Length: 248
Ligand code: ADP
Ligand code: MG
Image (cartoon, rainbow, N blue to C red; front, side, top):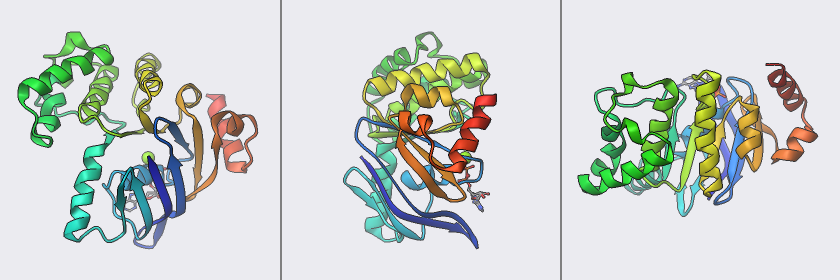
């Protein structure tokens, strides 16, 4: 479903991703872990076309992003990728002036051209999936962080994306709210949603990830099935990182 090959990205003279390869099969969940500044968010942003890159290739299903996406064909691919790849941010990023329903139907109506009625019916179902049916008419400021993040997940699902990317979805939440969000992510994993989850929460990795990919200093230093990476980490960065997280 996702195939990244030889991805190279820099900001000025700073190398942010050095020849990164990364793939996720359809229906599987990949966790990306690693210290701050190692390029995890940038990888996600390259996968959904929010960020350009200098070399390499990003493939999502049949769509291929290449370094020069400025041509007309490139722009069409970019638009298609953004429809197929959903993104959930650490800080939720809900539209503050829209209620929950308004947040969820915005893109289906304006990007996909769905009727309001159809989009609302779908939104009701998605809200049930994230256990927020009672909050349809609430505004973001009236919701807890955990509730806002679950609305953000429903909003991403409303596009029926092939892939969902999560960038530290529980980092801004206290443990109770984090666990509400983690259980929603788990249920999506069980339903076969292809996902990439950047997180520092080892419990979440254990619960949902088929594979773990460890980043350090702009590159992937280790990857493999979750159990084997946790049981026998090969790289010193992985060992140090797992030790540090286990201490919390
Ligand atoms: P992570 O998500 O692993 O913390 P990021 O992908 O956010 O890492 O960032 C990787 C590196 O790229 C960091 O050193 C960061 O400071 C740098 N960086 C990210 N975005 C920009 C930008 N727009 N301009 C300059 N440097 C950036
Ligand atoms: Mg980040």
